[in-house]
Image (cartoon, rainbow, N blue to C red; front, side, top):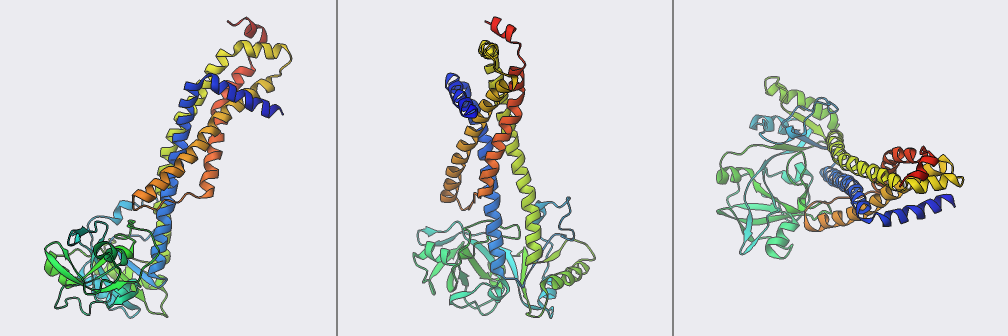
Length: 409
């Protein structure tokens, strides 16, 4: 009953200092919502990339132009995954010719916007790949077929269902034509639709949305677009091969091919997930730091408003002590008030986060995911902020001398 009475008193105090209370609640809300939203973005990105890696299959290997010998190395810089690539044609031939590799393909990102009449699809992932791109990436052709060679007589492409829908208003697009820059291409195959994130960016090269992909024959792309940089090599190991062991010996062979320079690595799906945890762990830590700054500001706001409340209610404290209130009762009263303010901020912050995440999911290609644990953590953080920053004002109130407090005007 005492706690309930203190909570009612806290709301009365908040109403009597409405402007400052609202500002303090808003500061806590911003901190909490920033933590929840950033956590949701990281979680959504993690699940989308994990889904894509699972799409590639457990026998997948990926050649990336960085040294990932120590996946847990604190000096690992995620920006290494982007930028200029050191992968060469010789590297591709080495991987393709390995007896443990069933199929391999080059992956070169291209820059052009697909256009059919007055319709364009700006979210397309346009890449150049080899004729066995489907086998190497473990993507299934649902309609039509893969182009037969790396340099077919006609300009052919294989596309995802989202591309077909955007350009032709139908997923039945075999034989239809569209423009890529100055050149017209004909659709010869369509990949099977997959229920994965839309237009997300993978640290390992390009979009993770196979539904938005456009694959151009490698030699055709080289002819139309000039020299190509090999951004990645994808491959599938044979049934009896262990992908981790294959990745290890290919890494050694490729680094030897580069004059023993550690600027290239081969990763299995398992190793990519490990690296993913490392990259997103750093990202999560950075996002938590941003939220912590906002929460620190909110905590200072709580301390400020509670110190003002203690000063304004000095005479009230004196009267309560004069009629028998103990130090612990006074301390509890002001501590509950600080907790009420911080928990209000946390709850409003969670509500705001749900709205922001819904808007991001509806208006962008991102797929943030709010977990129950992140909401529980947000409330816990809110209560902790109230306890930590409300404790000093509460102690000050509890220590006031009743005689001096009664004399206060």
